[in-house]
Image: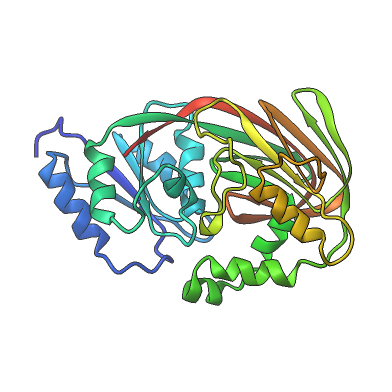
Length: 302
């Protein structure tokens, strides 16, 4: 191995069960493409990827591959965003939403590994989310939400998730359908667009969520805009059907159960604390978050 051969770092979530020998796969592709031996870093419960990504850069990695689910991808992206080192994806999660939104075949690990080392580069937007209570700044790539969608993430049975995948979210979704709205104020690019009781405010950088359902029909990962969906079902049993109709009809009818907006900054303030999620990970509760899009901040190779 020459001193100047490139090195890839692989940041893997060891908790994700995969039926492929990732070390052998990585070694084979690195050798075939003239790369040096890969740097191997495992995530932990305490540090799901941020520390490992910093370590990879310190070790001089020319490429960082996130091998795990959307949570691992988000943590690695938090470090690589704004820099020159590209990120690759080996999708091992339940949702793999970023990979799916980018049109990757999430079952083709061989292709994913080859693409990460020798594929084409593209830049995508990231969203910086800053909460005021608790004070925390994070990044997301796919979508974030407060209210009902985040409650689903909080209440999903992990064992069920391992057995039936994204259907576990459906189970949690049905269990949590009855619930109270929370008064929300949504300000987009400085203008108040919503001030009323809602069940969920979802902010998307990509369009598709679990099970291929398209929540944000106009969302593109590189358009410099966030897409916002406000869900406010009418009272009674059929309230959620109007929400579903609104999503399927892409919000074109005059019904206010689903409203769509787009913008570069989004600020959500709730009357009281409610569940909060980023890229499918429940991040506790909060009542205020400000989100800003950072266009073309992350380089992906695939």
